[in-house]
Length: 285
Image 1 (cartoon, one colour):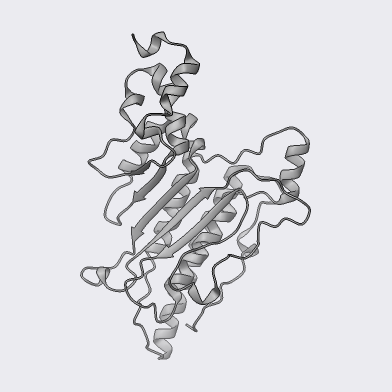
Image 2 (cartoon, one colour; image 1 turned 120 degrees about the horizontal axis):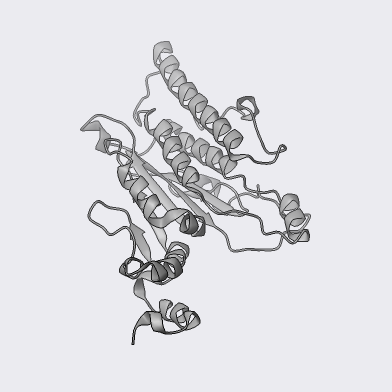
């Protein structure tokens, strides 16, 4: 008996038993890996039914490299398509700082961004999307932490190979997390309550442009590496570190403003570059 000959409801039930469509499934995008499960490549009908389930249940890990092109990423996005990309609930992108060999493998050589969609929960007037993390502050140098609560949880971290003496690399990825959160338009509790009261479901799905924004923002951070062992206190060294940080911050601000204007968000959520506050460091420049 052909799978297409049985009712759609039964096929959807069968999909829940397929290993590639399990909620615990993890997919790491590599040159030698398949972009989508085999069930999605059988025919158009099975693809239409199973691909959104795969996107919703899978934890995606995308390791990028400074020397690689974005061809693989774009091919993967095309394989998922505009109908399945909004179903993504967990996405982690990692890459290395743009540091010449062999220094690239010394210290905090890499960083990552993880975005996860939270399960729907009811908001009250006392709810806050800016509540503090459950991690203790003194652990920040060793563990990643969620930047905010709400529809999306944005987490960033560095590869803890060696101590980041100045703390500026950790600061740079925390700034990256702020920019990403602002781009994703995490709705305030009041905004979500208005949507729920009107009977509309708040659209929180990712788009292809959102994923491309993450990659571009990470590229801006990767192109501004800061040495983990830079203890030079000379005025020229301090100026160099300040210029590196300022240039990175300006690029992230400009990228975020461009993304918000193009995203067509609410007027009260569109920000200009001047709306971003300057970051404070754990240690001085």
